[in-house]
Image 1 (tube, rainbow, N blue to C red):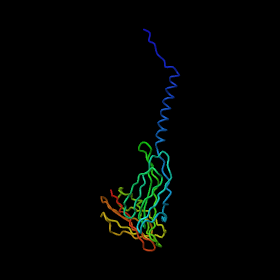
Image 2 (tube, helix red, strand yellow):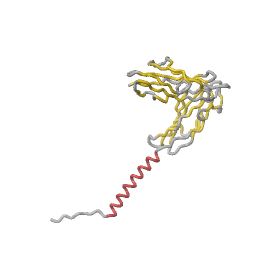
Image 3 (spheres, rainbow, N blue to C red):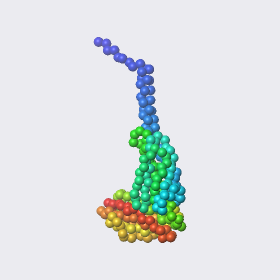
Image 4 (tube, rainbow, N blue to C red):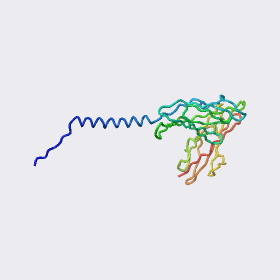
Length: 233
């Protein structure tokens, strides 16, 4: 018996390969086109006092937040955090600016999340801080300190560890940091009163520690950070 073998014409193989490559390229381009780019923040500027806006009362003013438009973006999520209270507001908008009423004489942080036109892709801007101007005054309180190390909720080994934090001030006149740390969720034990933004402390195995930083400037203005927490292995 003679068995006949069928061969695939060369042009069909080339066409098949072309279609395969084209499909993969289209998929890559589709993913790329769905990915938004991070926005560049414009106003209020970072680490400055915001003197612009419409004053509506002794305690509030309307401030226009602005950022650059981003590619492949269907909407933006503007997040504003009151650094004194920790309360956060989120505003969804399709515009690259939004007028918001905020408290005067209060420090804030803000960021913008760009959301894709289709799908769930997002891109985060940097986080900026500003002090919304209040009644005329010669000095402003420092921004509340932010934990650098240990990271909030992280695990560390027992022994001597280094606490590190970041603190900024519109007036650039920070003079000291008071560090409170113990195993209470509201730490009250002073473990250091220093002029630098790091401190070595000794921690014991199996314990959860809570700590905060009180930042003081040359005129006696002070800000309290949130309470940070870490666990010892």
